[in-house]
Amino acid sequence: MNAIEIRNLTKAYPLFTVDDVSLDVRQGYITGLIGPNGVGKSTLIKMMLGIVRPDSGSVKILGCEMPKQEIAIKQRIGIVSDDCFYYEHLTIHDTKKLVAPFYDKWNDSKFKGYLDQFELSPKKKIGDLSKGMKIKLALAVALSHEAELLIMDEPTSGLDPVFRREMLDLLADMMQNERNSIIFSTHITTDLDRIADYITFINRGKIVFNEAKEDVLERYALIKGDLELLDSDIRKEFIGIRETAVGFEGLVDNRHKAAQLFGNHAVLETPSLEDIMYFTAKGGRVHA
Image: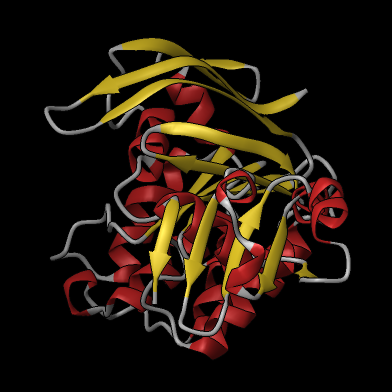
């Protein structure tokens, strides 16, 4: 079963459209949702959660339809976002008293343990928390009711490097249960280099690919060489290319073909997810 099934989802704004997106998020895996800022990641997440109503299309989460079965769905999922959904005037303790009764599987001792681990005082008001502390609180809530699916929207934004690492370790621990799933939307692709199984890349409101991370990194190649290697036909092979006074580097999505074209005359490297996102978003020629 898929953790999330999206079919033909569309939302049009005056200057931007999430355009006919279909996507399966596999159960039992961590899927990274990547793309530059402003290309549709957060809009897609908000449509999954029923915060934004799509113009057309459908969303099914853990086999249940949104928005028809929204209450049942939200019993079984956890949400971690850089947007804070809690009342600013309440303390963490008051917030817990408000949200805990909603969840049938709420575990109070787990929640207290996460507060201690994350160094969050129950007496602290939500409005006095930093952005990073609010994300820690959202993660503590999400992990305290045995959520089967975590939906995370820019969860490491505003976190210090130490807690970012700690959070990724917690997510890896959660995935020891093979029924659990995570969708992790971010523009900080180094986080996904560590933990993601699948990568979904969205650009300009459309899905570029949704594949196993290993397959993506094996298919794409970053090529570096002298400018004299480039001619009009060769340039057409590149998704994006960056030229300097001394050479070029560019991205292709067919490593085997590139190896045949360039032979020993250029260097072929495995790109990072950041490389793939950068060259795809920029496209064409990029001058240093």
